Length: 551
Image (cartoon, rainbow, N blue to C red):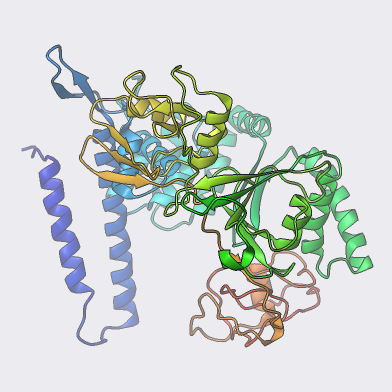
């Protein structure tokens, strides 16, 4: 007899399971053999896999619900067929799971492909239902399922089902890379054209992305056609080797980074705009540095600025900022915000002052001079709102402001076209804001509170242009600083050769880089080659390239 379960049944079962596991993980004493704890670890992983499959099923059912407004204004939920994805489904999921908008969208998409596999021959068939079944049985985790699903993304449903069926016996024993290789071998036999299509698509989607990494540095990730990448790498490596020979850089990997930026910046002309921000309640006129609490800054200081990249602030050296703004070290205003910048700007920079909210640091239009009666904001008002928000103001969304719509929080003409009623929203979240059940409230300090149809409230904040981080150069010798490793486990001793073989494929560079967060060796007490105090993984000693495998 079939048993019908609803969300309350799932909620009750999940809470009971969580409480039972919590009680079981609080033993009064250490006991049990290695084999027993290994079995417990495996069973817990099976529980995680089953729970993930159940979570995917819940996401599929949540995504199939569409709100419908009746003629009398009442809003009711309409349940569509499984596989339908409502426009605001990922927005609700991002709030429940506390993840970014992009991560939530990927999660919804993956859940629908796995847990909403329709009957054979229908338009909703994906052929990946076997992955969801294996997860529900505790034999396959979400990561390995995503590896297989990614490899089969462009495969017809019948081909995907055949491949998943052929992999079933390996789900309980093989890791992700081995499953990936098996999928590709099976596709090469069944439909070799699919692999070629994937290569062509990947080459057409080459891109270069950038985001803030560790404090003071950016991380770039690029994909390029192989032949173009080979030529560019040869140019970068040749210049880097020259830098090492000339003593400009002491490591070839650092020299390559310097060579890349020099080659790019040397072929561009970039203007610099520097805007100094002050508190809105500060006295009028220039504020002396002594009254502002600012000290004489050294060229080696690191200062937080905004505008060098969309959205988030970043750290730059004081020497670079002085060259960009053509100002002395003690500028007077409370913080600095740099616009588009380059290591070697050309032309005179433009400098101005911008008032900010004293608490949130949001840029303000104090006198309302930029407010207009028209629907579309003027250029100055649009620039202020984009600079204030930096990116889409929906929770967890990081689409740059220059790609966003300027939305009236209170619809025009009821709400004015002013900085106090405009926010940056990407096109997707602009549409979501207009759906039934969503509410947005822009506060005077430019914080924005969202309430979704489930009643969950979240608040987003503007960029703080007023309270930057300042990391002063104290002149401390880096060799005297003590660094803590991220994580050192009390494992059995590992030889240096074993470490290099595990973490540094190919001949080790002059100064190897750590590629794993968990290190199984003795940490060194000091690291003179590191520059500042955030925690770092210990560096292994330098060895010459091994002549062959040790076994």
